[in-house]
Length: 111
Length: 117
View 1 (cartoon, rainbow over the protein chains, first blue to last red):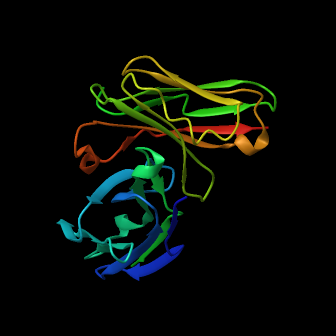
View 2 (cartoon, rainbow over the protein chains, first blue to last red):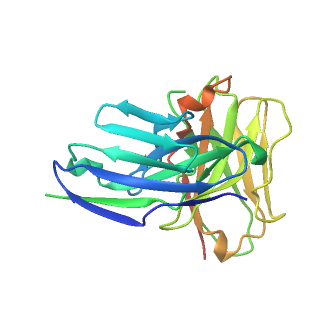
């Protein structure tokens, strides 16, 4: 099967930089995605990495190392509105075309 | 439509009753997914539809759960003889499906919060 691990909680202050790690175990890895979910809201797509390296989108960047089965989401210049849960998700071609989601990391941004 | 629409937004039902949840995907999105999210938990895959292909039902937790989709439009998720452990938010998502389409991600609806009492 597949398994993903993320820290359950991360706390940081406004303006800081925070990194949320994700390690995964799959047999047919295809890609890694990140989603943001505010309390009571729908998950929203942030990024997708299929190849090794860093993808940057504004204040958010996502990194993937396929050889290490590891990725991270980097949030810079943290704002209060970034307080949310962040989920990594992997697609494993041996298990169909759906993404399997990690347990989520709850980020709290303090003033 | 502009986004993925789910109805009802909230549903309270008595244990043992059947419920039907509806999802309207974004027009033109051929792929549709149902996920379940228990309070404070991650997203649990239930079922996936892609065009006219046979759906991937591998995530359905029991035979009380079923889903249908007509072509590339509306989908309904039906839970028969509901149990208290079915209480969760049921999320629907759609995405365009073409080679490399994973980069577009899923667009989720706001979900149906189901409470079984």
